[in-house]
Length: 250
Length: 235
Image 1 (cartoon, one colour):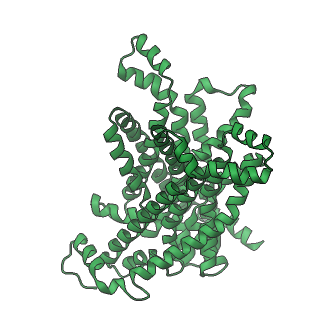
Image 2 (tube, each protein chain N blue to C red):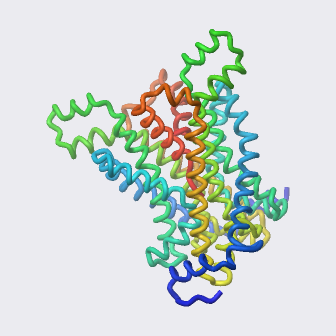
Image 3 (tube, chains in turn orange, blue):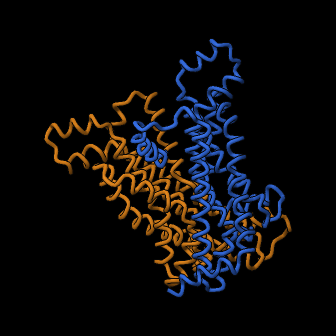
């Protein structure tokens, strides 16, 4: 692509403004859909694994040490290496990349679900038990609604990491938003390189914003009304801190 | 089990390269931790004293935290004027993430200190700076270290990503391994990365023991340690 100036900011702007880059199977919208497809598929698998496991451990308290150390080891795993290793060992297809990303998404979701359930005040749980609720009812009607905000904080941290890291998939298999960075470097097209980086950053911030809204609206109205305004503000600040600490972009 | 032999043989055959890449990797992972702590603590104290500033800083840092590292590694040379292959970009990017993460937890840690302790220090004649350095700061060390442990693990993993744009680190083993179709090389990179993360984490646990002698576990409190570990993961 030809640019009118050698200034990198100008090239970035021209690449982003060029309508050719906004259409077709190699255009920005299609790449965003591919990227979000990876994120959706990864989160689906990660939640199928992490949500039941986190609920079980949070509710029963069994296996706590095991999952805490498991989470620690998974967190240390370099996702870039796992994506490339799976690409070589299995195939350069969609699923090996998704499995590598699932390893990244499980720790934040699992620790969010587990600590959300475990953080519910034990007197509340005991009160429910003494009223004759079964263990399953306690989990679904008491622990999940009360721990939901922390649980969603974990999911949000997971989504954020997967959105960020799915860019590396482009180096093994040419899809997703990382493609603009790969191509930009290969053909020395700085407009595409920096423009692509802008698109990645905007998508990440937008997705995180949507997750923040979901987190806010998914809270049981009973919990929202019960707290005085000042205190709930402080609480959500604390939980956001929990959520942000669970993260770490890649 | 040929692949296992290949992995084991790879290490002595490439020891010089591994040593160099590990060194680069450690520099890029550890410097941001040090800079992050040095910057986040004063910023957190500033944020506590000025509420409107706190809002701006916390929102700003959480937006920066959201920007993916690969995009950040590409942007920073443009802003800093550094070469795209420079380790400075990775160090600056990871420092930004470290500040974003630490500032929040440090504000919470400083806020959670018992007011009675502070007033006792004031009553003993401590001036604000000395009180901050000798009372507030040591008491928030456990929270600070918990944050630093999260950062150190994620940094060790994230530094590899720099290899995609050519910054030298253990991530080079991943990019090389992919282009040469050599999974054993990637496996060596993953194992080395895991070991680095483990060693660094153990050192941080030791550091916490050294800095907080008053929390040294007695037999009775050992059971609480498990609970503390659980919270460390959650926080």
